[in-house]
Length: 321
Image (tube, one colour):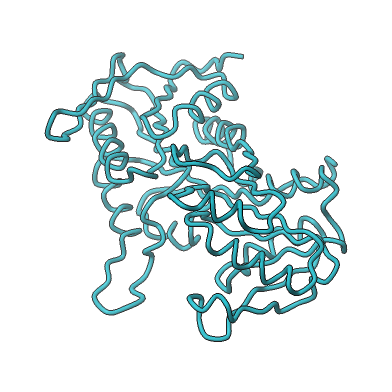
């Protein structure tokens, strides 16, 4: 399939070329030609190898590890497109780095989520399309349109197809901050929820306990970012001690920093499900499964370009089961 509109071009930078190709395949929009290289001192040079004058440009780039390199690569590409007279520059950022610093939690801390939003806007971005922000209020940090797509409907479709739905399943937030996300998945699965809480704070993992009933249930732990694997491994041990039959874990963004794979392999988790929003070179747990976000992002790109609402992509249609 080839998308017929001649005023749209899609480009990929280096953070996740595999996902970009899948988005291209799903949308029918070929990837444009660019080159990116670094000088010996680390400076990045971008060269767009075809005309973008008058086109609506969509740039695919996650700001995952190495986050600073990929962020600067994106900023430089935006600047190049603006200087080459693109009609609009739309950033497709499946993973939005620096989003975890979204408030001043302690004195004299920065708010990097806002800083990055400012940088993207000042560079010349006209719109941001992202996937599962760490906190939805980060959308408000932008002075340009920012569409935040949700992965929970994709996860719901996956688990319902596996027969993991209804009263025999409990969706568990592995920490207090994840209650809203757990409730959302539970509503799609028509399942109850539970919460892993801690006697003191999240650092005292040995003092965790479950609020809710997981005895003899299939448990699905859900979080937005899988980084070190500590949250899932600790929560899995706690729910198993509380009588859970088996444990699944799902996360929007699988960063898998060093040590995460070994930690998750040692945990009592049957399957770890993540999207392909991030490409990592570090080892993955043996039980990992990837669910592609490419079709969702491809549909969103076409809808944005055609000035159609993106809201139909926010929900999972259970009648399609």
